[in-house]
Image (tube, rainbow, N blue to C red; front, side):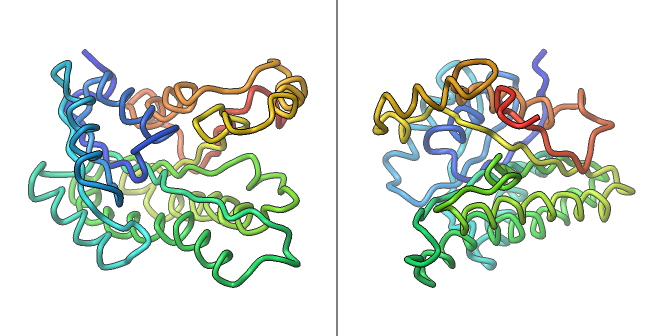
Length: 248
């Protein structure tokens, strides 16, 4: 029996990288996975089929997590079809990296809306089914950049730091109803995006990490499963660093 048997998990931004690895691991652990997408319906169906090929249950919903009304409708639709939502993973995120002196208002707003506002939208929306069930786990995908900052990523760092403060506040508000809220702060995770980087730069980053390697999406996915499962039933308001010791 899997760790997420009989749980419905809603994941934003699950089409690739960390989000896809989380969806795959949740299905492997027996969970019913619902994911959002904004790209093509065909790609969403392909992901549904991939996640379901070994008997898993997965369904994609076209929805913009950064839109308040769309987030509420998404939750209503998921609850109508699957009965409830046991776990929310706020994973949707983008970058618009540049130095502050060059950053436009649009670049700032885009990152804050997708990375931070979407977590507010979905968390507010899932309150109702979770309060009704008097149970739930909310997991916000932050970053080590949100803890230590990084030149050229002031918008991204602000959004990810905001998620940590948001996480602690929601944990305090909903803890008495047995609803937990935690954050994960990945470090240097090797995904499709990092493959385009210069290998020398990547190797320098690896050497600066105590474990001497970059993380894999599966490393983050396993941490997510832990926080989603009943194994972490006495953990809330915390930030779990999945960074190979980059931050100590």
